[in-house]
Image (cartoon, rainbow, N blue to C red; front, side, top):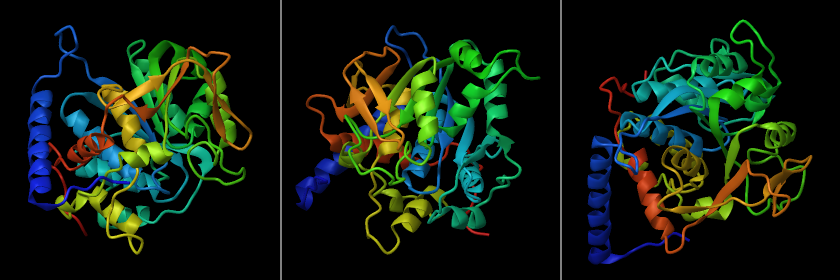
Length: 358
């Protein structure tokens, strides 16, 4: 349950904390340094979204853009692992709002197509110019990006089905690179951060296609078994709900498509737009690591069955598998919520942010 402070003192404490977060954020963006004092290189991200069934995808993409504005990461491309007609233009509308209208977007060749409460509205009411048909085929885009990347530099963040990564693994040499997909991954990728599913186990009934593993279990199984670099899984469920966010998006301009995504998702269900932070957690871990909020389990492996249900097994140990689905000792989850909200509510750095409606 969300912790709520009442009265003037509670308001003053929240206001003071918000000011502190803002000041720390300004200092952090002014100089990003590594632990040894040397300038920290931006994390090179390839992001992959389903961007249809839930609203946290939009919040996570907003976070990634703000972290890029601060020099903490470079967004090389955004992939759609969904075949939903309006997912790509919705992604493009958010990219455009954050001043990156020409960011490459990759479309999965064959995959899951689920309905959405918000994508069509965003596509039709906010500026964008990329469609499912004009987007680059996802495997080709991934291979192009990996071929020209520095060795060991790429961080994949998958916030949806693992279809694109399965297809990349299966790809062979072509005009882009003489290396197979697996060889490219091994040479160019640092790690994969995968949001999915619940830990230590998904115990729900089979044949219920929710989440990121169940709609395409074959891909989840293949990637978990065959991806040749570190996979850092992050969890959802109660863990992600305890640090939920999005409830302050009403403070942002109406021109913000992410605010509208949350409003449409909750329309008729709740006056609050507070949703779990499953995808936001994965972005945070990919760019900033687990500190100061989370902890990581490194022993064991993630086993996924034919229905896409996962369970963390203590043995045998797979050194390429680890997961985050709990808070560090002494951490108040509300502080993680505040950090996520603060990033999501930041305005775009670029003056090219577009007005809403057309």
